[in-house]
Image 1: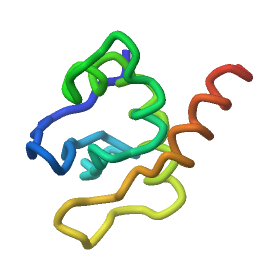
Image 2 (image 1 turned 45 degrees about the vertical axis):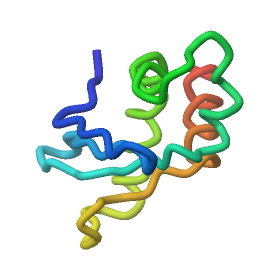
Image 3 (image 1 turned 60 degrees about the horizontal axis):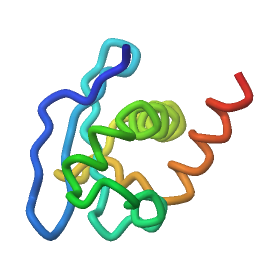
Length: 95
């Protein structure tokens, strides 16, 4: 199962994590204000539990972003947007 490595929550801002793409560790960041995750809040009231619940979708979005852009020079890594998460979710449904 794909996983998010080196997860670090920055309270009020979001989560930084690492994925492996083509043998290279890639840093990524999801903002706590991400609208896709906000729509999924329902029974999960904390941001860390949302990240854990949707880790597969977040991982798929991060892989797609890394494949598109390579490594990021930003210290936070690639910003994973609501659109990235929606696209990843749709791609997972179409498999």
